[in-house]
Image 1 (tube, helix red, strand yellow):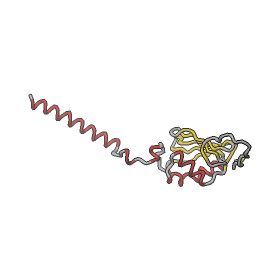
Image 2 (cartoon, rainbow, N blue to C red):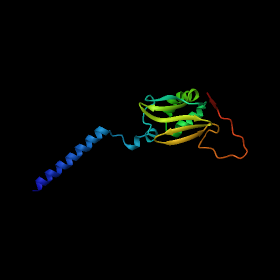
Image 3 (cartoon, rainbow, N blue to C red):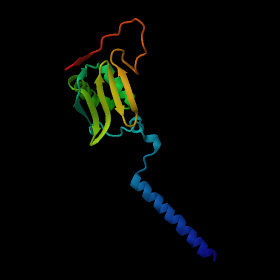
Image 4 (cartoon, one colour):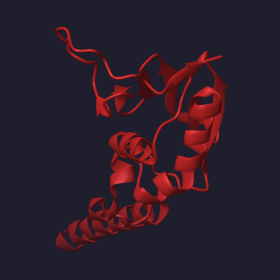
Length: 156
C-alpha cells in the first residue's frame, strides 16, 4: 500500500514539475529584476517599432530639445527612445501641432498643442499638461498683475 501511495505522490510531483517547466519555457525566464523603466511604463517596444504620426491641429509649437526630452522622459520613454523619436516629435508639433506615438496599431501617447500648453495623453500614464512658456508641467496658478511670458505658438 505504501508503494502505491509513493508512486502516486511521485507522479503528482513529476506532473507539476513538468507543467512548471513547460510554463517557464513558453513565458520565458525573464524575471522582474530584468525589466527596465520603459517596461514599467508600458513602453516595451524597441525604438524601431515605435513611430511618430503627425495629426492636424490649428496651433503649432516650436519646442526646444530640452522640452522634448523633459516631456518624453516624464511619460516614461527611455533615453534611446527619446533619441530615436525626439526629432520626429519636434517636427510633427512644429508643422502639424499634434502627434501620436504608435506601436503597430496601438497608440502609446497623444500630443496636442492648445494655446500656451502641450496636452499629453497616455493610456498607461494618464494626462499631463506642459506649459510651453515656463517649461513646467501642470496648469499655472493665477498671477496677480504680472504679465505672462509670450508663448512659442502660432496659428494657421
